[in-house]
Amino acid sequence: MSFLPSFFRINEPKRFNFMPRYYDEQKEDLEQRIRQIEHEMGVDHGKAYVPKIRKGQMGNYFRKKRKKLQKQSNIRLFIIIIILFLASWLLIFR
Image (cartoon, rainbow, N blue to C red; front, side):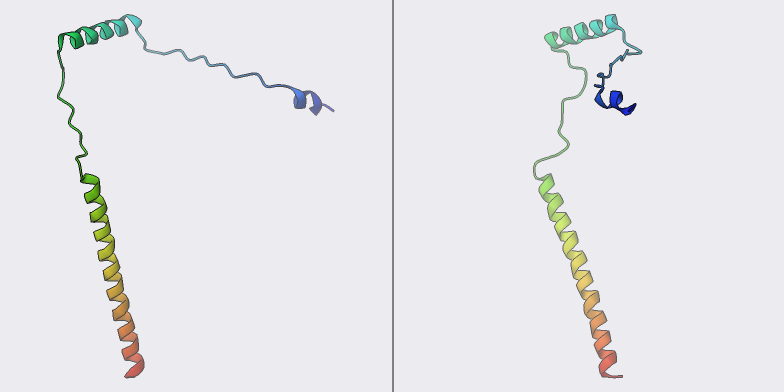
């Protein structure tokens, strides 16, 4: 009967005790203020955002993939036709 107390026991929620290792609140505040002031002054450190995916690029990908699959299918069909031709030639002229 020792299983009864553990069977009816309600589990306690797990505690979350995460302490950041390298957090400097003053440094974070300073960087936040610097970013805010630079934004207000219009200073931009870095290049303008240029998207890497251009319009129509995905369509080209699917066309290329379809063309590659069609080429593989044609090669496979050609090999099967050659094998069937050789097998029939061996059966007929042997």
